[in-house]
Image 1: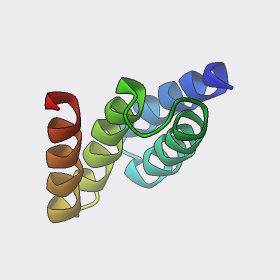
Image 2: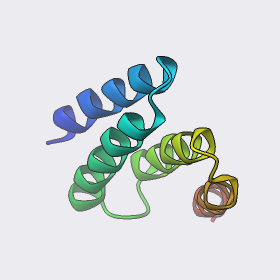
Image 3: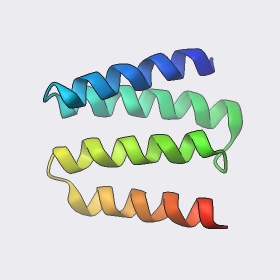
Length: 79
């Protein structure tokens, strides 16, 4: 399943680069669900996807939600 998550992450990055943050958010969240189920919440891939979800949310004007995700990811990797 992690291969599917990698493809979804790539699609999300393409969507974000092409000005489609809504599509990017969907892809990133789907990838995140797969990685979360496969590796658990402390895995670095989950935190990386938190970053991508945050970037998509920021592009959608949801800066407060994006900041919260980034802070959560940072505290997760620091512990």
